[in-house]
Length: 334
Ligand code: EPU
Image 1: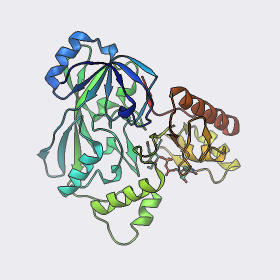
Image 2: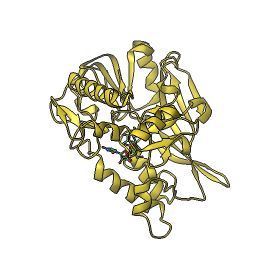
Image 3: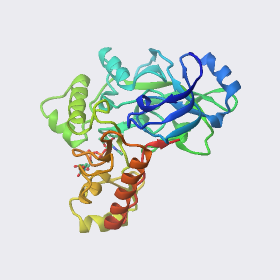
């Protein structure tokens, strides 16, 4: 670990490129250094930073921003049905996906090109194109920042749900995920339930690399590259409503995309609702909703947290007025 720095600019550490200053900042590249940090900061004072791709930062962050830079990835075990891959929390997510594909191991290809780190991926159970982390998850290790103890979490313990896990619960304590073990099937079958993906791979059975290439092409066609146009991916969750609510909306708006859930409720496409309200490509101040995917809030340059709040509030109000549906922001706020 380098020194604990004071008053550090976080603009390059969050993909929305919000100007934010951390009171203290340190890089955790060895787990043993956590004792020293815990001696100086309480669990409540520590903000764990991964790739900063799902963050909505205030202009000042009190306490310590701790960037997890633990590295390493390895095949830890194989049995008749699965390969178990363990990756340290600071590994780049997409690099891990590419590495597994280079070894000839399928399973993570639908999750190609998602920004962020391995350690952040289970926190909101990242998902795309029909696969989510929970589907390929075996276990993770995390340090309880209150007492410094290392714990192992199984999938059940993580309480994965749509864009959710125990690590997002305010009452779950403060945890620093150190490594994640994924379970990849030895007998691979492509997951092609997402319409655009099936359309791109219409001829024959694709390889994992071909699925990854198709996913990357789809993402590049509608999602902005944060290095070019700062953003945090989907800015709102897709709202999940009761079946009766979805049925009433669907009868008024037959084009509304709906996705029935296992629990009987129905997920609605927030991007569609936002587009119908005229927000696709619309700007307010220095921020706005992206012109190719209305669910993505983009910083057009110079946006501060208040600009994000203004766009967020305006979009939520319009969707609520028109459809009676509440949207909730996805990025984590410190
Ligand atoms: N749609 C519109 N207008 C828009 C955007 C979307 O009409 O501006 C419609 C689409 O035509 C489609 C439906 O809404 O019928 C769903 O759109 P899309 O397939 O683009 O997916 P999404 O529901 O908007 C979710 C995830 C994405 C993930 C994609 C693909 C959430 C909050 N977002 O978006 O995740 O890549 O599905 O699986 O669940 C992210 O979390 O950062 C992210 C990009």
